[in-house]
Image (cartoon, rainbow, N blue to C red; front, top):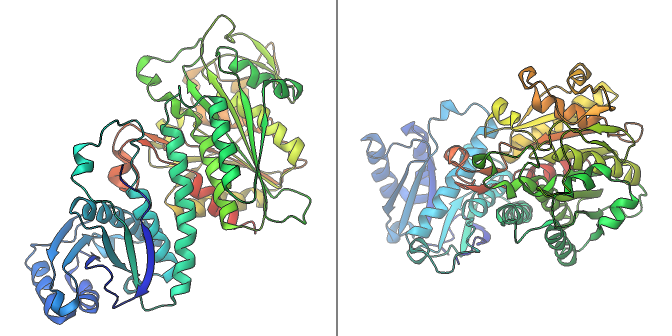
Length: 529
């Protein structure tokens, strides 16, 4: 099993603890000369420039060329040139940042294939990046890009045996090394949590039942100073009147539960700054509105929201952020047996609202509804965010590159600020969001003749499936205690079956769990300090 956690070191520019270097280049030849001269010396830099001028090396985005160095001139035996594309095409800083993450990921995998267990990379100051930003991008690119999920492989594959694990990466700088080290530590914490989220999403449903997930959360609390764990088992859920959540679980032999992780970074403060709620359906067959076979594959990933929440609160604790966070993860399976809930059932939520079940495959919002109300009543957080693989409609709207963002607050400025802060956190982490409306006009699509609200619109032709889902969730948020609420729909970004997002962002896996949400929520939490 190959390690995905190399050690990161910040060292002076001339350090040669590694004899391999990755250098990023642009397609515009003249943009590279000073950068190459700085690291390779005049003679080798001139040779590389001739390769660029002759178009033998082009610098297209993600293009890589491994060249032999001259250890007598500059102390390097191997030079990996990674293309960033045309500088003029990169008009936004966050686009450049994402390309740096991506080329570092490609470089790390390439050095791994070439049996080079260490390499160095510069701090990108020549590109105008601050050292703390560069260090974070380098760690994110390498740690996320080297990830593999091979828990169930009995034997080492040919690819593994033909490679050498990356042991160390050296970040070369002329700046303040402590600034870079602090930033690298931050990124190591958030990336480690993201990899835990990926592991959770990738674990098959037999091995990750609702109680199995809760056990993982308990172990996380035991190994992370500052985290506290609590479990609401089925009996406790009944006492808490979680009628919607309990109904979803009736079709499974595995009991439901709610996992709660809390962190007090401001122990002297009595309240809670942030509440996080993550959907945790550990397998979703769709209930009696059963999914077609093609749509049921990998439905063990329907707990990616809960995984993101657990990973985020872990990162927040490891980093010691100065805020109080309550993370609530409702967990269940959505299967079929003689006791399973049915289309046409009328259920009573924890809030007391009755819900007509028009589609048993719209189960995630039922879990979230009870836990949102529970979180509001028990913790009274200033800000409340839920995250879920909630609707197929969000994939129709946004595809696999961007997650849906829905926000609401009684104060318009608070609403817009929350949205702006989350959008910014998405750009900074490469986990992009797109804002969609949460308008009460859409509630008419959830009108019921026999209950307070339907769980899903009956008229599929009316569309707006992701919006109506968010409108449903908003019904269960208490805005008398919550300043602002956001819902993140990550159904299109949390788990990959194709290489679409990998082709765009090579630090993401070709397939399987991405860990989307973990770094984004951590970054947002920083803004609340």
